[in-house]
Length: 185
Picture 1 (tube, rainbow, N blue to C red):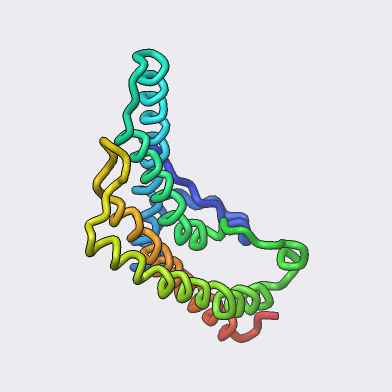
Picture 2: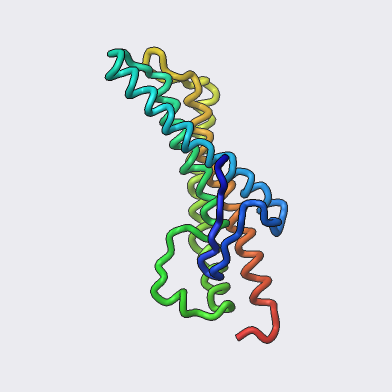
């Protein structure tokens, strides 16, 4: 079984995957992270099968190759909100690590309002017609023997934007909670 451990780099606490989440959204994101983490060994096994088929039996498996692409897309697109929740996203830490908890809350809250939420809105809005067109045509792979689920793959784009925006809102709420506390410097 795969065990997902989340290291909160700002507080230096190793939280096991069975730690009680703070909210329903956090529970959903933790569940999503556990589920998506299974894509990695499945993807590795599929790549092994593809290589054995190609070099051992001189045959291809287009559907398997596309499945690897779909799993890879799911890991990145659905894993973005998981990474944000676990505070494992990319951050320029030149000054941030020396900030007090209140200063970090200001940076996090404003960063999500100014950058994360507008980006999620742009991605969601910009991909909407693209996804709707794909669904209306039930877009399938152009490759012979490919998967007939391209429309599902494209749906990951607005799903990622929505999940990331929801997680950003949860992070903003956490930052506001810290900022409302009296006596913190």
